[in-house]
View 1: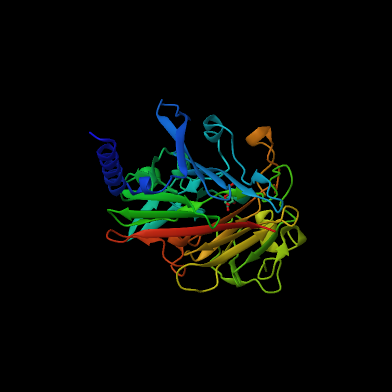
View 2 (view 1 turned 120 degrees about the horizontal axis):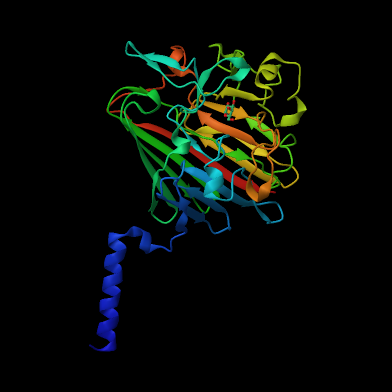
Length: 379
Ligand code: GLA
């Protein structure tokens, strides 16, 4: 063969490969490696997503967890702005749901009981704020503690899939779940959870990353300035279960309709704050169709800002009140009280027991879809 013919056949082969695998058409920004092994010997992978500005997100098959998110501050210095662990062994001890994909039902179900289509279901009660037992975050072994199967999709995404079997943690129906993380060149991290079922079930799949935008996890987030696109919130009882009331935030320390430092009112003498030990409530997002703004949070010192949009009706704002230094995380840091905040877009907590709340029921033939976009900037 002449040089030219060789070149033509090489070109034809690579064109064919590109058609078969669109990921090859553009240089991929996703890499993967083995992260470690589960106690039963199964291999666990970790994926790294990187974009043109140098932002990095790492995600793992264990718990479909966001392991790390590095973003630049106002001077361009990259830091990880999430709580978590350095190794898989650390993540296996994750009792605070750092970075995790939480399900089948994120947040609380009163008494660990609900009924659906006239049938009663009992779940494990794995949490007891105020001494009152409830089901929290999917149960003893929720989605945050199972091994998902990861796959690179296109040039900027990783998809995790998991089959939650009928009866797992007490929930009915075989639930086929996928969670996709993607990082684009507009500095947006997108998380999409989708699910279908073969029998009626309830669900609320939630992303539970803890953020400290300063990049210094030894400092509190009390100076972070938060805005919530929410005129109402859900008051709770002592067990942190919504009472069913939808209360206006106006004139209370729950009002984040204007940018406000978290520490300004967190210790106010206000019943909801006393029950939660600080902010730990669901805010009802102002009405809107499809994707809407949920929250903006800014750290004045580093200049980092994160804007969260979602298609869900509520957002749980939890300011790390239960962190007590017993979680020893990345770099050996003991995560102390209020050193991070979680902003979990969601359906309403305890919706399976509250007919007046938006329904959390998924039936065969329907597709659940929860989308979150986190947009990062600094200035
Ligand atoms: C959620 C809850 C909190 C707490 C954390 C996990 O954010 O609202 O009460 O349980 O999860 O520690």
